[in-house]
Length: 132
Image (cartoon, rainbow, N blue to C red; front, top):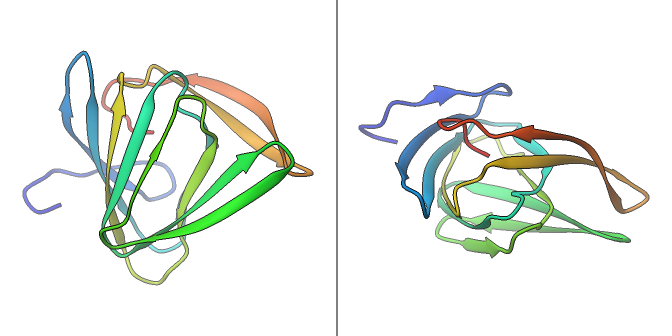
């Protein structure tokens, strides 16, 4: 994140909005050791992420099962609207990633996973300047 100002989110992630217009928003996110964002969706937005440095673990919830994948440096992932996942950095080194969403995220629903089934816990309006 050289040259970018990083805001610290609850849980220790830091983030910077790199670009936003009516069609897309792009975020740089820094993930210190043992940080994560809980299971969530991006409402009606499609998304993509790329790991710039380090490694992140994505856990995806689909009815009846949970799938994990590790995304290392230069690995990318994309996801459609309604995709439910969490992202974490369980490793001892900081990870850096870039995330893009289209259209910009307006709200997110957060989930608990019970017996492999994602159960909505709460929905939050996403404020401009706060990443998902």
